[in-house]
Image (cartoon, rainbow, N blue to C red; front, side, top):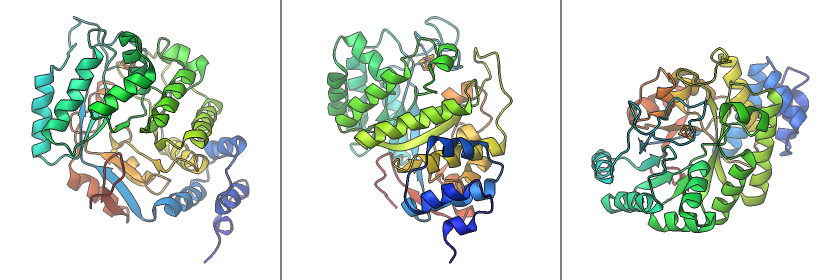
Length: 366
Ligand code: SF4
């Protein structure tokens, strides 16, 4: 069988393929080249080589529900279509009995994981979140809980007047299993100032993640693209994730997210991404982030057909059923707000891969 570099026809990509084949990290200049190439079949060969080395022909998916407990948020980031001010039409807060009812139903339906994120609501104390986690664990102790972005953790700690470490330790004690990667957006201060001016800076997001990793939590990291960022901003973002990962090994999954601009305050909108744009970002992420085990495609953001194609461009995690997702649908995502296990398995099998049902802990169940 031919070696990977010998299968690459684009001479600009061959040296990158050689590094990947030899297990050497690629450079920021390589990442810029990957993000600019039109040779997507070569890109697919290199990204698939990395993917298969890590995961063979497995493609992971989860059976999960989303709990977006409140959309009342102090920050009102321009990029966000989900948040509301208190008292504004459409503003809501789920009371704990509501959450209990939803989780009981989901547990009866056989869900493995609960995914929880919400707005920064000043009326909610840390005890509300602790009780939320405990009640979920009381319903079914085996339910895996992935909850609270670094932005939320920072907010809880400041509201409570306690350290990040204490906040994390109390939530872990109450049942927190892992953290999602939201709030990273794009680390560039220039772009952040426009799309999320009041959100914690990228530097702080990374500090919270470092603390979470040191506390023993595995986390995701996201990257929001196709708004105002440049390719250099994307490479800088990837680089910072890779550097922290060298130190902590706490990121389990990287999740690129194409921006959906409907109902947001971002006026200089770009057209929606093309297939090539998504492929370049996902494949470059897989190739550059050699030290992050999983690359996840959220089919709700990408559309199920594009997400399926990305399974051959570096993606090994097909995300979950996510019943009840609200955040990206508020911004105009045209996908369904719930998937079924059969739907996810069909897409994976149809791409010639082996579906593996799992949770954010990646302990395979079937
Ligand atoms: S993106 Fe998050 S922090 Fe910003 S307004 Fe929306 S819910 Fe609040």
